Image (cartoon, rainbow, N blue to C red):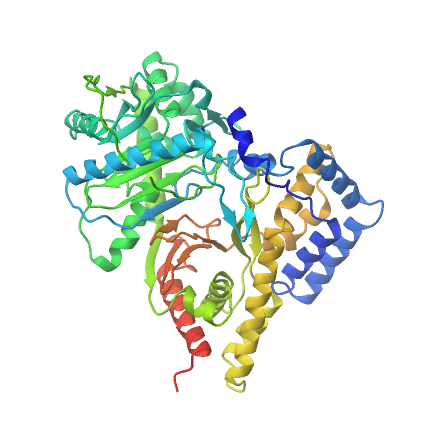
Length: 584
């Protein structure tokens, strides 16, 4: 749409990396993970793929041609392949949650006051975006693409039989948001007839009305349907929409600017466990007896405000990968406001059964997910910077060390990095294990080595990781390029190249460790589930003198345990601190 274009003219297109560079990087990434004979087998396959006149150069040429004729040669393919074609449920598996610093309140009146200010601030942010006045963002001195911001509002993922799609309703200029309380959905108009946003006083009085119309009842939690396996939900969605009333209610949720979930209080628990429970609450609602029915997981942007001061946001990634901002009030025109519109559903036997199934499946998923959030207080990024080390690279090496110490082997790890310095760029992954990190880890518990020798190996490992990061931020990552080559082959009607059918490829992309840094200046925690059943997901947010971590794992897997990895990680960080600052 036209108002997007003002953002990206200053951002370069994403380059297609040279084929030789990617294949070399791919082999290098396999070195610390594979035994020599397997590595040699893969080397031969890569050599065959890349020879002159071979399949590799032909596909590369196709990608370079695609790059000349599209806004971004990989972004649409990536969204389709990674998100829209995935059939896994959105909660836990896909939608990340951001749990924000707890507010100091514990009653419904303050909950509504805070929700009012939040709605007003988000609408002000939307106005800044729509008017093209969002100040440019920079990362390492490079301007970032802002194309995705307008798409955050009035967007929703729609389930389909083979793949989903994203519906953007921004052109219709919807004027409402959706508010959910006690599983009941309301359409709340947030603009006056003259186009001005409602004042905080107006929004607050409307939230009070919603509260008085949404007492706990035996209402069916319609939102739970959106937590299902995508194929199952797609079939239920079609059944649901045969009815006109349901169609209108669902359309209202889908077209709304964003959703606001007013969660009911949850049981008090110890402070130590509270951070984990708060993150889980935003991520999936805590279960069908708790607040999971207050979500519409397909919605691109949902804000969650609990009665206990917990709050955060949940987003659907196919539309955008999010970062958080914040803006305040004006006088109300004295016009009586219409009642917020409650959304009703006709529920027949089939749909009731769909809801029951969805409830059971979501509770199984939630009970299977172990969430461990903690604040590491011994040091933060200041100490690492004082030693001229990149904080992100240090944490990555610490994670490799912690994983190795708990299972005595390195595992395929993907660290998610932004590609927003390119036009329409999304994300890339950095393959964390390196030969240098393996050397450091193996030397780590060797009593024969001096502290100086270990420190030097640690610096090598950190520098190697930083070098990989630099390449990715310059547009020379390997994974999106490999995916592009594979999809280009499919697109040209060719058989899938052998290097992608190689066991080494499958092994090295079974990401047992999925990691992500959330660089904000607030004490927020990001949280999502592991990518594989026997894996972990680790998110971290380094602050000046502390680091927030969230670790998730599935209980059904006997080899993984979030609490064990958390304590090994704390130990590893302490030992690294000792290495940098020995206590004599």
